Image (cartoon, rainbow, N blue to C red; front, side, top):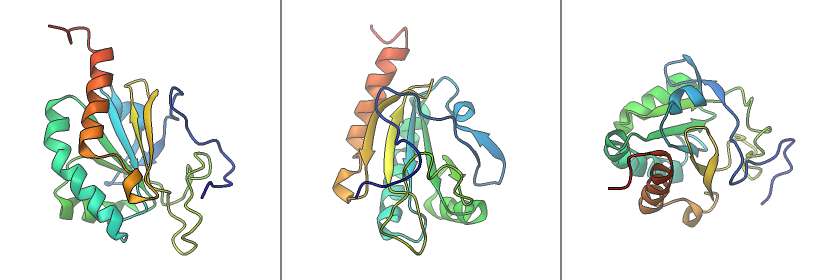
Length: 171
């Protein structure tokens, strides 16, 4: 299932590229701007039409309250255009950011094209937990549902990153 993309798939310990894409409102955003000083869970999704993605997004929507009070960010990237993302986001009750790569500017550079769907040419489902400087703490291959991070794994990743970046973490 490994892709033959033109880019290099991001690896743990490396800096994730500072994506520059429109959000669900159509406004241009940079990943570093969204992260600011907080850890980020960055999810690459096939799109709203996939039942597996719908399930995964419902899990993220359930986690959003925890992320907000824990000074952590959730960000989803898909090939859906902003207006579709906006509707999907509203239907989920999500408040976190969706970024649109409808033009597929990053998909090859990140080597995350899912080669089995020749109709939609979507992102391969993947997740990355990132430090505020966009360095990768953990990476998950979500092509198979069991490869996706669980809510508990995301909590553990955010705890590990927060422990490392928050000077007042220890009692």
